[in-house]
Length: 259
Image (cartoon, rainbow, N blue to C red; front, side, top):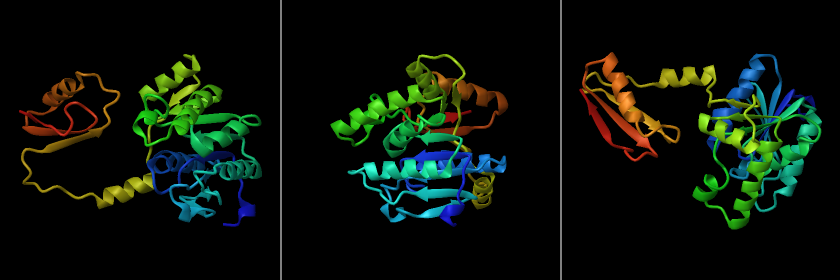
């Protein structure tokens, strides 16, 4: 693709490469593809510090331009931030959508918010109490990420959040119960859905009892969620089932025999 031909109505800024971590694949690309199907021209600009081999690459994925900044240094972030800002000004979008209120995209989005509406996407709890505690970050990084998350979620014209919990947290940080925070679950394009469906293996008919796998962080479930789920299953079937729970829950990886 010729760089001079690139235009965008919406520019989406990310802090990771498109291939290594899940945010761009699970959130940014599906949303961009859907916008494109509605006649809106999106472009994605990322800094591939986690995959330096992608630095400077301009790709097209599902019809969406994906631009990697030439600089991908995690220890010297200013060049990459400037390059994200430069791409945004070159493409002249109507708004900027930052995916994760932290890192390169967060800094670039903060600058761009002076000249265009800013939407911030929250798909994780990034600051204190979240990834600041779980991630392998140094003290300075933790303070920067805590500041970025609080600042950007307040500064944004609108916030999109991956879950009910994150949406409620954004409203609390913004001190607003208004309609400026929208829950936007992770999505999947129809193309990818078809590819996964065609690759799905049919389980052997000999598996008895059938196994239901629940895979989640379970952060938004009440303590009685499993009992409610089991009760709902018992209403629709009298077959013996095994429910296997995998995730961050007290009863994770434990099978529950029903029937």
